[in-house]
Length: 351
Image 1 (cartoon, one colour):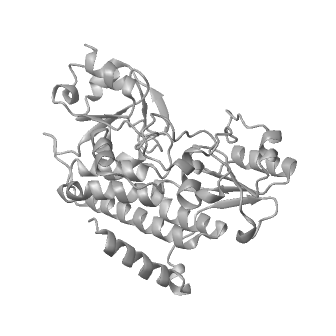
Image 2: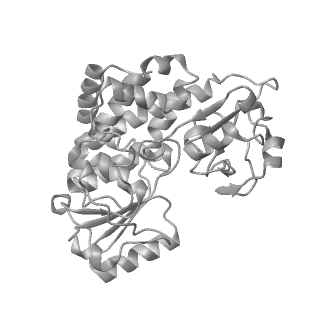
């Protein structure tokens, strides 16, 4: 259940005070993190490079004043006016993480960073890359794991590293509230029932024609599945992105279809291929356009907290009553950009 602004701020102050106590701090299980190079003390960290989009948003939420810029996220996309000018002026320097790296080590060093941060799965590939970059540049490199469910602790740990614990606790408190409400909603089985009394099924339509999707258990559908919706793309032993045929989609015949791609929306609404699906016939196409990035997926970061919340509001009357306030609060705390009523209405219409 949502809370008003005064109660939220008061609760954050109280929670922050308890968090300082050792007995309270121990209740949170640390998620995996790995440092390469000499670990700097928090007061020495003033300029931080983000390696990819998920860490862009994590760092932006926690300490935008320490950001060198964004790896690949452009807040100017769509020219929406949703973000404060000081954040719009931050440069985009290119990605460092993964195979699609566009940031050279020479350019990286020109920014004089005190720390490099990347978030996601800590596998051997990313460990090897982080170790190599740290050794070649002399800049400490932090990998911090975490799924959407881990967001509160991810925020706490990085907040401690960066020396911004008060901000981290505010954000983790809101993240915990959203996740708790979503989990409770799923456990209470509040979704509309199909004729077979199974949980409402969904298909996530990715790409221009909507024929790419995330399978059950993937990071691409995590924000949806937490709410208890059933992913029709359930492939035993596989979790990730997959291409889908129309024949397969008709065989699954999901109750609802979710997308955040405007091209897919236009194609789905105009193509005769999609018209026979139950979700399309019953007008159960849920669109999350994403401004300027995805709310449900792309990037798979803390941005999905708001997408999860907005999706829940379509089925949960309690959240529906407070979703405008939730959107305003999220943009204020996570994106440091207060919204007008007209902007909130615009975001509601786009989701």
